Length: 228
Image 1 (tube, rainbow, N blue to C red):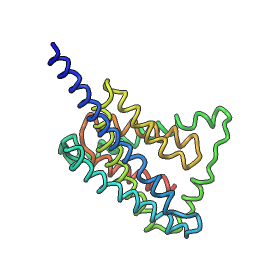
Image 2 (cartoon, rainbow, N blue to C red; image 1 turned 90 degrees about the horizontal axis):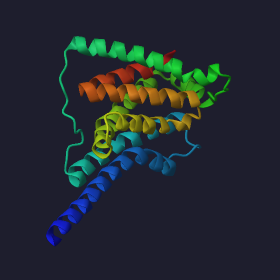
Image 3 (tube, rainbow, N blue to C red; image 1 turned 45 degrees about the vertical axis):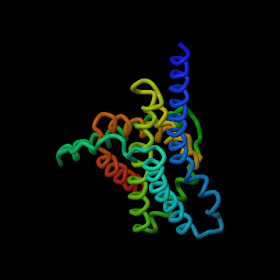
Image 4 (cartoon, helix red, strand yellow; image 1 turned 30 degrees about the horizontal axis):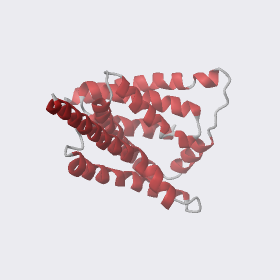
């Protein structure tokens, strides 16, 4: 009886350690960029350099998390095995994702239709900056599509499923995290939109296990959004 109690306590301790390791990895994925960015990025820097440095820090999160997954978690960075799809599936999926994201845009504008006056200062600033520098625009959109999908969908989402019960709670939590990472825009509509965007991408990845499609879609959507 005493031995059984000790075994149960040992399993509880191991479970807590296991969860702590996973939570720490998720924390790195979320906090590495804002914390390091606050330390090294200054408003006195030239706008283009400041944006590039921010993206470099985001890219730097990937090797840090890769090493953490291999050395600390003792598992792969991408937990869910990638499923290959046909070219037509890629095309159809991206088209459907665009339609769903367009619908998410309507939801995001509900506060505006109800009379809420949002702040578009930051968004307008970046649109002006990128429109004047097309190579920078392409790089930023490609960078966002690649890093954000690998971090939030390929890394964080499967680990939330390891921590949380249910088929949809991890998706909601991952979308909420994704939305909070866009608070810097100071725009309520953008936060609502990125939450919906996060839900759409998370649902797709859970069902089809193909991160490549999401990377391509994310890149194309950001590119079109900033060009309009």
